[in-house]
Length: 92
Image (cartoon, rainbow, N blue to C red; front, top):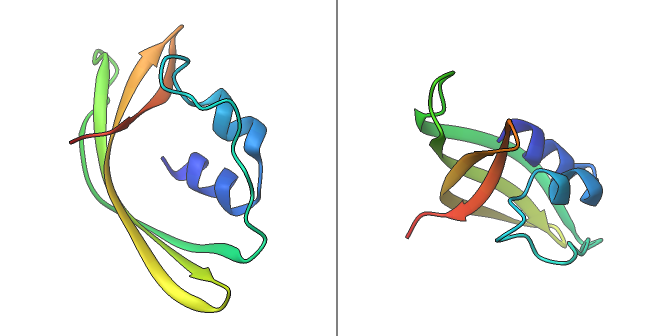
């Protein structure tokens, strides 16, 4: 989760896409030049251990959108794919 947040903050779309599960991954990730990710709070984690096939991360991502502060909250599902942890999507 932290590496994906950093990739969004540094506009590293290739990394964001590479760490997204192929079944749920969009074709592209567009950068918004007015949006700046500023801070990540990991609120809770579940699973994701050495012997787990999936895990969850609940987080709060802080940003500034054209100078206006905002927060995005999500509880995300991560799964192992080809031996790597990848983002599946938000839990509903």
